[in-house]
Length: 200
Image (spheres, rainbow, N blue to C red):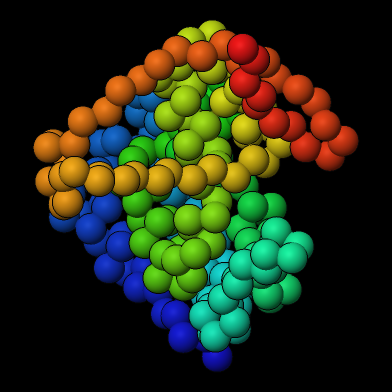
């Protein structure tokens, strides 16, 4: 028995009745998503969250990754890897990224409902799976070269992270000051991985 129980009735009530989102589904840019399709997606994600994602929550919480300086690794529990692989194989993460990089955009309200279930079952799964959504940010805001990198991020299943430091601002993000300097970079292929290297 899982620690997680989804409340599909509540989610559906909010999406289709309270927020009046019925008119969004099956029309305009979301023509492929009628309310019945959205309900099927919600039901399947609820099942995956309850059965597969929640299964590793306790183990990964009690056995978190610990950095080993000798090997430069921070191993994850096998149970977590299995849950993560299940989520990625289900490919519902594609619903929040542009078609140009392998996505199938869906209404934001549906994506947030999916996020609620995944985050409730095992929040680190959602965070580890942000590579494609970060790729969509790169795609939306980048140059043609950046758009190609975003496509590679999705194709190769790259992970991503966002790190924010505010040395002079504390919790006041607006008080922070940054400085960017353009640098020339080249993409260098390595066996089994890719890395960006600075070129002076």
